[in-house]
Amino acid sequence: MVDLRQSALAPRELGARERVAALAGAQAGRVSRAQLSGFGVADSQIGRWAASGLLIRVLPRIYAAGHVAPSLEGDLYAALLYAGPGAMLSHLAAAWWIGIVDRLSFPVSLSTSRRCRSTGSSSTAVGT
Image 1 (cartoon, rainbow, N blue to C red):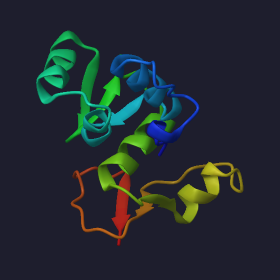
Image 2 (cartoon, rainbow, N blue to C red):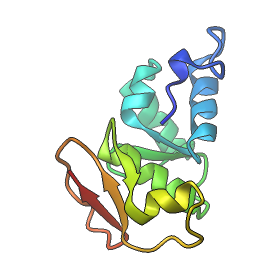
Image 3 (spheres, rainbow, N blue to C red):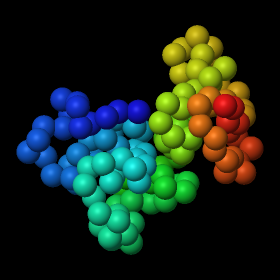
Image 4 (tube, rainbow, N blue to C red):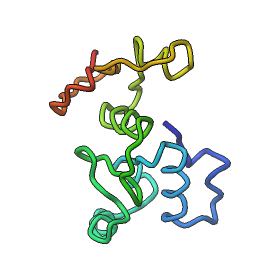
């Protein structure tokens, strides 16, 4: 995940909406509520952006920014954001991401140091 608060993508003069757009662009169009809050976006603003279609909920506390066009990378980022800080692709998913293998197999494996619940999806497995 990208931390735009310390990135060249987020000059201080950018507003929250522009920083969120840059962050979403760096994360295949996905952002977490925690990241939005970190940029100073109030819950009420998140609600307004969601009501207007600027944010589309794809998982609990995870949003697609502006659209939900099918994207494997977007789905993987959403799963990683849902799993929380320190989460990473593992096993064949990690090998696929870095180009060692040509095909991604399902379920996709993620590893995280924290406990989290599956979303019930048969396409993602989370290990701790």
